[in-house]
Length: 487
Figure 1 (cartoon, rainbow, N blue to C red):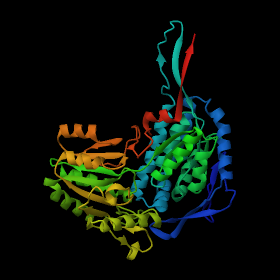
Figure 2: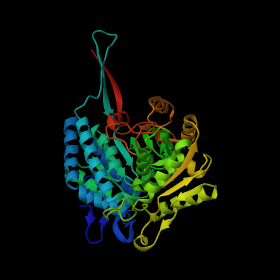
Figure 3: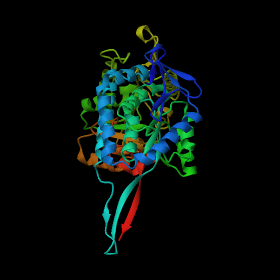
Figure 4: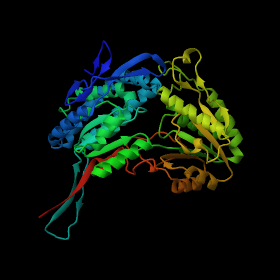
């Protein structure tokens, strides 16, 4: 079991067993909606613990890769069924641990189930092509080989979906895994690994080690027996991992930040645009890499759009995500709350006008949590910090423009290129936006946040290392091509 019920101590999962870390030190995870509640204690692991997990993964991978894709897929199907039966338990853990509202947490867990089933089916799909040879007596074709041991480093904002969308393709293509979850979400991730355990994966194929990023994350990047690293998190850490992996010749995949724009054209359905902006910006407390951050509005509809946007924002109910009717939960921890508040202060200092929000909520039921008001700024220029840097909180900037060309220039005037959206009824403007926007995920008359599991996901510029996750595109990272000629 992952947990000692008396003291809520969750363990590492290594070589098919739940084990304590060698240091026997723990991090306390508290409910961000009520910091008096301890959700659980997770290990502060060491490089010694990581070495054990990598060794187990390396040893098991030799036999795991020899299984047919169909057989590997059956393990994923079984894990999906077990997770499906535990949606309520896992979702409640997620809400208590990182603050996401319960309906969102249930939706994310259900998405994890769907991802497992999708990649289970990949076990019976093609992995190569027949290619004509110049030698008429030869047969030439391609096949795929797994990387070996894959290190997975995941963030706290999607503690079920992101670990699964990295682990599932790695496993179906014949790799073994060592996963380091974000400490802030390690309890929830442990519950996902319980499902892997109950699904009967061979010992050592799936491993989880919890600990500080500067120890376990850095150790994964440096480890000579880790053949590939897939990371989602901050740009600073991602670039460090990429440089480390490159220096020793390991394959790496980085998904990092976003500063995602929404353009609202003069002919847009304003009600639709407002609903999508609110959802994209403030769901999950804005703690998404695809969250709407900048809203660029054509001048002749700016005032009407702003009026509708403020009215809808005023309707948002903030509170404990376990409570019925709550629409937006707390920031994940005090550090993240203070980061958001510091950006709000920078916005004021640099001359932006605060339209609504901007304050921490502390009275009454908010007293023991990390709550903040949904926040909107206007009179924002592209040079301002809040228009350039990822805030990762419920803060958006309104920017007024005269032309669509100006809107596109502003939308592209950041270092990121993850997601972007436009609201318009003009087909030519849609096509121009698709062609000219620097973003890996382009949305038309839809919110900037979110992607379907069967579709490739990834960014441009400093948002990623330019590979893609999810869908059938995942095979490109988790395998290498072999070209075969026989005669």
